[in-house]
Amino acid sequence: MALDQVDVDQLEQAEKEMSFLDHLEELRWHIIRSLIAIVGIGTTLFIFHNWLFEEVIFAPSRSEFISYKWICNLSNFIGLGDTMCFTPPIFETQAIGFGESFITSIKVSFIAGFIAAFPYVFYEFWRFIKPGLYDKERKATRGVVFICSILFLMGVCFGYFIISPFAINFLVGYTIPGVTNIPTLGSLINYMIMFTAPAGLIFELPIVVFFLARVGLITPALMKQYRRHSIIGILLLSALITPPDVVTQFLIGIPLYFLYELSIVVAARTYKKYEAELSDE
Image 1: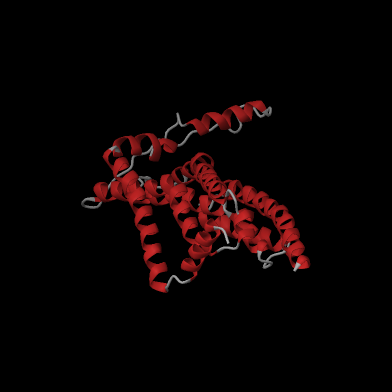
Image 2: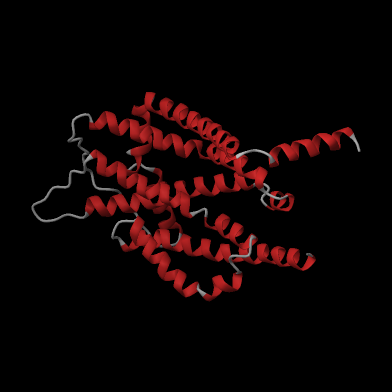
């Protein structure tokens, strides 16, 4: 037997003999490295918190935000004139709690740090579970870190550039007679998080379907059978993560439906490979 083959066999045997505590220790270091990345980026963003709030967090609440220009240009391009052109109402944001500005700056910095560090965090997560996969499973999931990272960031950008302008315009513009809308800093931040982070997770749907179809838990026929039920579920989910605004709900509902249809295509291709492997065995 070749020496390199002996080394490989010894390595595989060592991996098999790893105890529960060894796996726990390995997981701990993956978590530590992920936290270091999040804390490092979060600390940097906290140092530059003025830029973070002015150019990122509060940007969708200003009329010069790029999404308002895009939507207006789209309206003119499709022949609707200025029908779809709008800008958010002018409003002030107030911090009413003692130390709220400081605590909110920390909160926003580290949430933004997690979003920015997501590709690396997922990479560490994948490094931990990858040794437990079979060779054919590793080949089937090649590039999963890149794809998951792109889908997550696409979802966050969709929530930030598309959902948040419509949602802010509706929520601030909705008034009750005798009441002046002066949003608190905390409420504005919570809604901005709700518009972006869930959208990033929802955009991972094709990847989830890929893995479920890969192990035979989901079939394309099953997803087609429950297509009508999925539409109801998508509308309910859109209502949960968006304000009570029909336009905003459809803005996230329509992409969700396209993601569902894309997931059916993914499931069809993946399930064929699963059936082929079963027939070979």
